[in-house]
Length: 73
Image 1 (cartoon, rainbow, N blue to C red):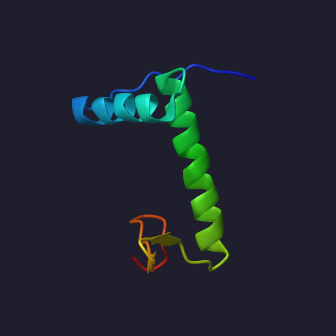
Image 2 (cartoon, rainbow, N blue to C red; image 1 turned 30 degrees about the horizontal axis):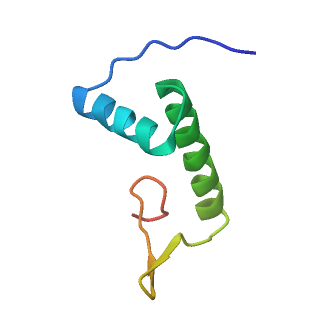
């Protein structure tokens, strides 16, 4: 099933969506938004299980705190 959603979006957010569309090679803005929702869902599920979100780079591991997704933050 598919539906239509009309939303108002700030110019800054629209520019971020366009930038991500190019970075991801996504076919549309809608695809970028679907991917963001999927990522948010996965992160929310992980945090709900008590998992931490860790990012690793340059030989370091850091816990990422995402407002609205991390318990108690």
